[in-house]
Image (cartoon, rainbow, N blue to C red; front, side, top):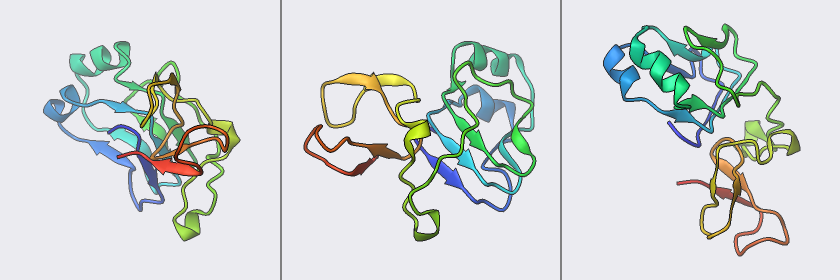
Length: 141
């Protein structure tokens, strides 16, 4: 699960219930907000979990205002945050983020260009007005 915005689910944003699913998981650069359970609920523990955390496979996520808490049975990643995403208009399904989460995700190549830097968290990537051919916001595939 990479570059997703999971908002306002009635239960957990993401739930992992088996060790097999856990050992194959990477959860990075996501916004998990306003969910009725945990942002990320890991219902199983294993050596694979600790290995994935150590290697940064669960990192650069933003956990905000989830009813049961950010995570269950999972330590925070070194670059995880808990900031209000300041959605442009969540009720109107515009999940562009505010400036407090700008460029806080995993460093890498920007979508559609050869430049590198830090991406925004979540599914919608900000494109500054003076930069690049896309303008406005760009939804990541």
